[in-house]
Length: 134
Image (cartoon, rainbow, N blue to C red; front, top):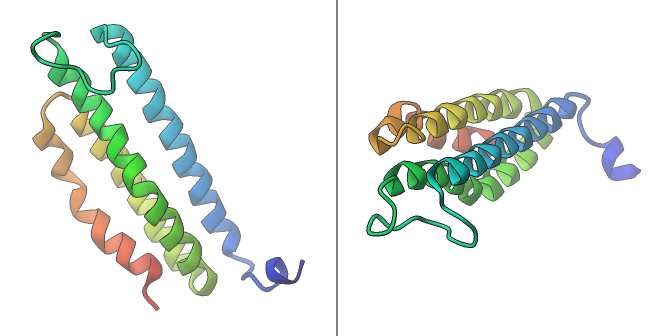
């Protein structure tokens, strides 16, 4: 238990943000499942083809919003976990900001208008940088 004992008391906030992001990911996965049913895009198809499905763009926007979150999740978890060792309050605050922005990014992308995703994207890089910066 030596390693756990050496973590700052506030590291629990970091863990809470990681769990919150897990639930956000679960929410996005449910939305993709609902979009699959609504737009009739069945497994194992990852992205719908416009030549085969008139709603391909709508489905693909939902799928892409979730996929983008999955692509960025490992580096987010790494930066948040490591940054939280020395600065748990700052790291968890920016991690929470990133998670909320990721939610709105997904919501915007899911409209079927990809340009709606960028309204909160300015938060992603600075919050990732500050989670890990000493």
